[in-house]
Length: 560
Image (cartoon, rainbow, N blue to C red):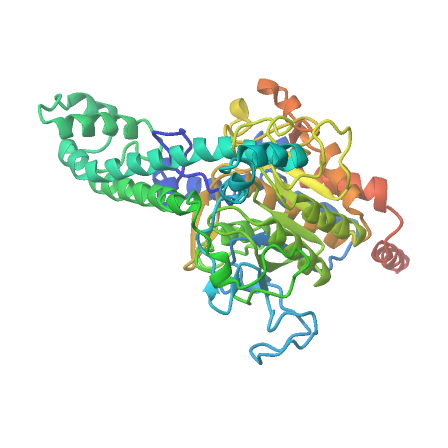
C-alpha cells in the first residue's frame, strides 16, 4: 500500500506540511529553501544527516568519470510525466512510435512510450482497491470457516500455510477496518468544528496566549472545539498562524485525512472488487502479463510523482527542489500501486517490464503484511538479479521490527534466514533532520533485514498539477537511495547491485543516538560522496575506459 503520512494530530502525531506551511514555520524564504533541500546536505559540515549529493558529483567528476544515463523504474501510483520539474527527465521508449496504436517494439504493450500501467485497462484505471487482507479473507473464509465444520478442519489440515495466512489476515482485517472507520469519524467531526474554532480565536493568531485567554465555553460544541484547538496549537504547522491561515490549514488537513480514510470503506469491503470490470484480466492466472494501458499518471499520482521528483526532479522557475540523480537519471513510470494494496501479479509483471525495457534501478515504495503470490514476486526478484538490476524497497511505516512483522515483498523468505535469497534488494528506513530523534517515529527497522536509512521526513518534491509539497514516509526515503544508486551506476556502470549495496552500507554516517546503530545493517544514514569513494576505490579504480582517457589527456597537457 502506498502510504503518505499526513498530519494525524489526534491519531498518530505525525507532521505534514505544505510548502506554504514550511515557509511560515521557518520564518523567511532562505530558511524555507534550506528545508526544501535539507536531505542533500553534507553531514561533515552541517551536522545534518543529509546524503551529501553535491560533493558526490564533484568527487566522481574529479576522477575523470563521464556519466551515462540510468533509467529508474518507479513502480508506484503513477507519475505526472509532463510536470515541469520532471518532464526533462522522463524516460521515452526509443523503439515505440507515440500514439500510433501499434506495438512497435513487439514487447506486448501498445504505445508504452513512458512506461506502462498494470492497474488499468480498456475500461479505465483502478483508483481504490482492496487491502490484501480483505482479499485473503474474502477468498479463504468459505474454505476455512464455511458452513461445513468437517470440511473446514480438513482444509485447514490440508492447506496449513494458507490457513496461517488467513488467520493473520483475519486479525489485521478486524483491527484495521475498525481504525479506518474511527479515523473517518474523527476527522469528519473535526471538519465540522473548524468554524467553531475560528470563532473562538476571534481574529487572533494561534498562540499559547490566545488559547489561554479563551474562557471555557458553555456551549458543548464550542467546548469540544476548544479542546481540539488546543491540540492543533501544539502542532508546529499551526503555531503562530493568523485565524484566516488557521482556517485554511485546518480545512486542508481535514480534507487530506478524509481522502486517506474515506476509501477504507471500500478497501475493507469483502464484496468490493474493481479488478474484473476495469482491468479485464484473469487475475488468478499469474502467467498472464499482457494487460493494462499506457496511462502513466492514473487517477491519483500524488505518491508516485513525489517519489519521481526525489529521484530525478530538476529545478524550474522559482523552485529549488532537485532529485538526487537529477543530472543522470530518467524516470520510467510503471503504475502498480492503487489506493489500497498492490497485487502480487502486478508487482511481478511491473518488475519484469521495467527490467526488460532497460531500467537499472527500480524503486518500490510499497508494502503489505500478507502476500498470497509471494513466490511469483520472488521469481521476479531473481529475474532482476540475473539481469543485474537493483531493487530499492521502502521498509514500511508501521514503527515495527520487520523480523517480527513481515513487510512484503521481502528479500528474506524467512525472517530466521541468515542472508537474503537474492543479493540485489536494498531495504531502506526513514531518518529525520533531528539528530536527537534520527529514526523517524513511523519507520520500520531491523539490523539484519533493513540495509540503510535515508532522509524520509519533511521531504519536499513534485506532486500533480505542477505543484510541490512536503510528504514523509519510508516511501520518501527509498527514492533518495534509488537516486543515490543511480548516480553510482551512471558514473560506474560496471558496478553490480551487490557492490552498490555494499558501498552504501559500508560508507553510511553512523549514529549511536537512541539505539540507531541497531535499526539497520549500516547503523547510519547514507552518504553518497562516501559511497562513491568506496565504490571507486574497492570496485572500480583502474577499470574505467573514461578514467584511462582522462589520464592520457592530463599527461598531454603536462607535456605542453
